[in-house]
Structure formats: structure tokens, C-alpha cells
Length: 251
Image: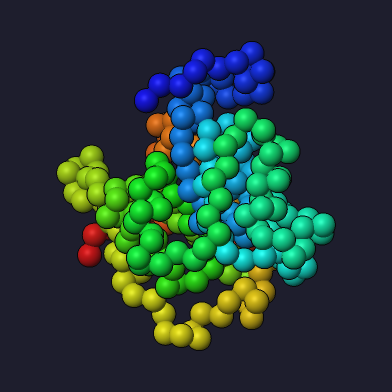
């Protein structure tokens, strides 16, 4: 797929990308052509959407069926006080338009199910998990595996978070099949075992750290630079200011 040349305005807007030898004009063209689906416009989805929009990702899909509440604003920085009561996808789209009017936004206000997930995923190059419930995480992970779409997954809780990249439809440098989400988490925890953010709380800035790491992985996948977190789970301890990496494989 080809895209139109970068305009003078785009060359100026993305100048700090273009001067990076690893990205350059060809990398920025890849970003412009890319279609990324962000599942959830909440704490994780907020920084993902903002940084991908700023980076010049050509098309951003947003799926969320919730509305903005006052308690969201402590961490969901894509929304503001005036957006309380509005659909999250509409609020997010307004912010993206202010950040970068050159980005196309596709809005999906419904809940992902086993029946609609594959068709939705099929329309995008990369999917980002900004979810906060286990059931839907398995649905989206299975759909991405079936449709051979990379999935950038993250989770947060109280003061810590994790990030990984799932490409189970590919093999590694040794010819081994990459692990899937179910290799990392074979089954969801029993109901009530893991409290929600509403029950346990979460430090607002934590979602910014983890969501921004997700955005970084997406940019690496699109431009083909660096080493994505495939088969590696990056763990962040916010209170200890410590990162650790755990390797995992096919079970």
C-alpha cells in the first residue's frame, strides 16, 4: 500500500522523527499508512491514543461503550471535566482532533464479544489492549491470534503494571512458535479474586507510564525498529521505581 508524500506541514510536524535514522521519512510514511485499534478509551487507552495521534498514525480506531464519569478524570487524561456524561469515544475523538487533525478516527461504540471481535480486528494492522476485565481480554487475544494481528497487551493494579506484545502466529529466530496470551495466562482468575480499579484503587500516573510503554511498542511494530516485547513480560513496580523482565514461551 502506498500513501501520498509527506506534506511540508507533516515534514515540520514530524521533524524529530524524521531526523532519527531508524525512522526517517520511510518510517513516518509507515506510521501514516498504519491502522491501529485501541480497545478501551480509559486509563491505558488515553496515553496510547494521544501519543499515537501525535506520532502521526494515520488511522486510529477506538472501541468503548462507556461514558465519561468524574471519577475517570484522575487518570483518563484524554477526557476533561466538560466531557463528563459524554461517550468516551466522542470525548477521545475531540482530543485527538486537537492534537493532530490529520489523523482519521474510527469510532466503535459497542462491547466486544466473541461474535464481533474477529471482524473488528480484521480491519486493523495492530490492536492495543486497554481493557480492565479478564473475559474481554481473552476474547480480543483469541481474535488477534486467529486474524494474525499483533496485540500489545498491558494491565495495571494499584502501583504496578505490566506490558507485553503477542504475535503467536509467528516464529522466533530459532523457529519456535511465539507464545499466545493463553500461554501467559492459561485461564482467568476466579471471580472476585482480583479486585477492580474501582475496588482496589490505582495511582493515576501509573496508567500514564504503562500506556505510554504500550504506545512505544506500537511505534516499534509499525516502523520495524528495536525489539518488541514478544515472549517477554515487562513488569513495573511504581513504588520501588523498578523495571523487571520475565521471559515466557509456549506451554
